[in-house]
Length: 402
Ligand code: HEM
Image 1 (cartoon, helix red, strand yellow):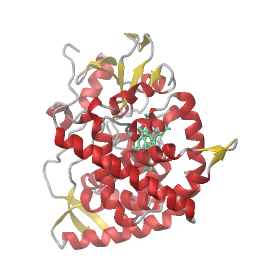
Image 2 (cartoon, rainbow, N blue to C red; image 1 turned 120 degrees about the vertical axis):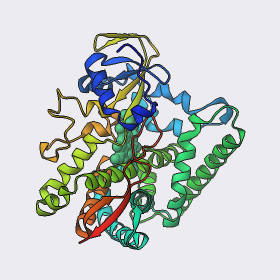
Image 3 (tube, protein in one colour; image 1 turned 180 degrees about the vertical axis):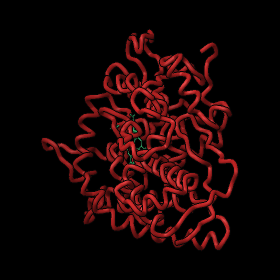
């Protein structure tokens, strides 16, 4: 490609897929803007990077979560997603004992109640007109389930989004934006104070089946997680588990609205429900990229990368790679593949994937039981301004009930 591709340009945001296809064909490992990141666009090259966390490091990114104006440690930078492999292995093994498949299974009946309640609210908000599925359903469902998972007061879910935005947004605050810096510092203090209090409460009075109590109980060779590690893990859940799931639910609604035949097809053949969700994850993965940094000079896809090179893994491009997914630009749930790459790969593979998949299934079941179709109430979907995520700003719908 003659000119560097800009992943933040309006044309790219509108429809990144033709650009990804060009990259895969002409320059599968090449520098793009912003920041001269080394974009990796082919499925196999992305896997190669994920499989070597020593060479393609996540922990090197820690520094960027701590801009000098912060003047303190950011719990986000201490999350296990940014830990070096040995430390990561210990943390992942400990938290995996608390955050298990059976925890997710236990949450499913509650998820069904939440989804039905939100559908009732959708009807009320629409009142025969239009309603934004994203703000009225897709935002609330993951937040309600996060409150349940942590065993905290459901009213707290209203604060989750601000917490997650402020904590993960520290890296984006301009050096001269003093007001925003103050806000971020304040939120960090607020979150830490809240979680420390929560830990004290759970120690004094353990819960019956909440993740915080389980995390405090986890032990290995007589040693468990420190309070600081539990705080960072809870913060990581808030940062990694809310917006991503909201965006997945938003894509499901949007794709259903654009492909109304799938309402009937899924209702008459429910074995297609899981493949439909996997195909949404493949076709419109919420998380478009992940970042790594090379710890020494290396070669990838025939291209030499210097030590310290920021490497941008284009997951969404890998999931459209023809050599792995024939007819990749066609939305086709019947291809029957799991879109695991949407959740990463290797040691950092998404810990919340079973929860996200369960939420998607419950949301889809509930939608199919309540609506005969969705009509998109706009000619032009607006996409959020983000390098790492792709999602509609809103999903305005007219609801057609059964
Ligand atoms: C990691 C995507 C939902 C918790 C990841 C990674 C991806 C991802 C791509 C890999 C990051 C890397 O390689 O550096 C998604 C998507 C979701 C989703 C697309 C929804 C559709 C969730 C949920 C939770 C969660 C619901 C928890 C409640 C985590 C955690 C990690 C992670 C803790 C770090 C794992 C580690 O470093 O070992 N996620 N995620 N995610 N995700 Fe998710």
